[in-house]
Image 1: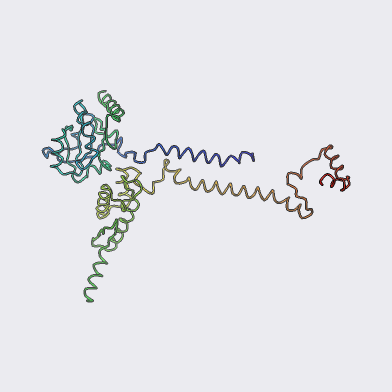
Image 2 (image 1 turned 135 degrees about the vertical axis):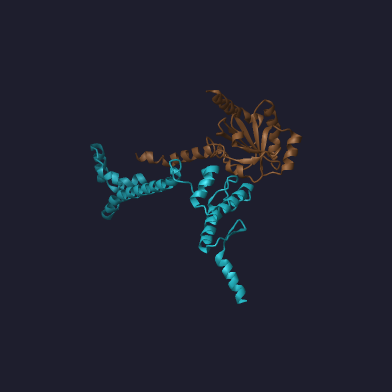
Length: 178
Length: 185
């Protein structure tokens, strides 16, 4: 018994080592979204293209990617070509133009291609705040009933699209069931 | 001059302000006491809510765009007269419990809240055990050393000497000191 107590410091060391080792592989920026499995927040915002008012009902019906972007966001420029590619493959993407200048945003879509079925103009950042957006780009996967099912922070690339595509495919399957 | 001063005093007694992140935030409703409490609530929440983008800064310290937006939102909500709990709920609904520097007590955060207390209790318990252990070991030793200059460990007091050992002891005790010295030198 006396002998065993000698191993307490070693046990503490192993425990501490385990937590520190785990900590090496945790991404502190990977904050779980508070919105997953909740309804997409209500909004009434003008479409970027023609000022037509869009609401949350315009999202419902199909599985959507909702992509938050801005022309001030450098990573969005990196992401954009891949979004265009996805749109060409038939992925339905809705854009939220986050705290941006309208003319710059329209020029961006004209020059770089427009992957979005529509983009809402969130100039004040109100919708983005309701979505818990902390920066751009951020992408939400929203199911056909308008429920947020997944949140992706940062750029979507060919490399990380795989798991996202799987989530989307599952949701499409789910919505096609009666 | 006195008139000017009194105007200033009047103004300051009516309007309260909080200085957060180098900016002054005015609270100027009709009720001075309310202004005072709102200014306090605002500066407290700005310190206690964590900027969701920048990991280890609160809303008041951060320069991130999102922190500025949230400060503005916080300011307008406090001005509207929302309670502390309503504002915290608003933030948690959007950004998760991550934004709370003082997380709510629930099953997921219980370890966080009670862990240190448990570890402290455990440490005190171990300390107490060590002290008790040492005392019980020292007690017989000290009483013995009063009577004799031989140091005996407490374990030895219960030791039964075998016949063989007793013979060896007798042999050593009966042998003359000269013989002993011869070996030593």
